[in-house]
Length: 320
Image (cartoon, rainbow, N blue to C red; front, side):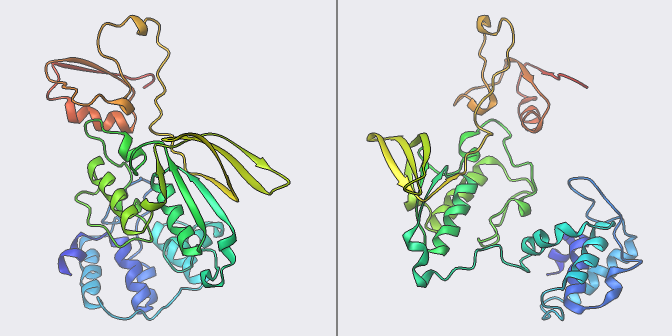
């Protein structure tokens, strides 16, 4: 417990202490975190070392204690959010944040045992993170559904992208399925193989995989007004076929479909040229002169991963 507290963000500890104890002091000076607008905020929250030590000591003392506050009311939630972030939060965020923190359910309240949802069916396009999450929700509702996936396995973007250094650029605690048990990530920003394994494991454990029709692509879809049904044209292992469904749900990703730059003379380039989303299997960068176009998240991951092996590495940036 001591080690977990020492590595925890002080904002998290403060909000937990207020939730457990109900003591208003944790929402006031000198415990107020400094406002920090960075994507990854300073874990010390800008607090003095002696204040940080006091917070951690209190977190250890009250660990395992049943919270005095059950579900915070709206006014308390507003105060907690303002104290945590160091500035006032618009009230419109209240509902979403209560769902995010598990104080309110985002599920549709339907009794699956009543059979009301069994007369409906759904077709989900894509077995990436969104498709997996949607399947789990529909299973809870008792709704029949299938997932069509053009590839041979689940995972979406984490199956398709295999370039060196590929990893998530969102902290893993924010990139985990809320319905699944906590995952023991190896890093704050987990690498692609670990993410793909997490997607596959979650799909298997939550009964998603049997719903997937692999190597099947949606060719077209249209709404039939008189039948109140979707007519979806599919192209799969057995050729083209038509399927009807009540709900047509797209979980299509956009981070694996390459968009090649329109560069004059590219078609006459004698070297190897490819988009990062189509990184060739077994491609060896050692001893090669390599040019990378772009300085976004993908480039930030690839460059450190290959710079020591390439004979020469040049990054081209459109604007400073």
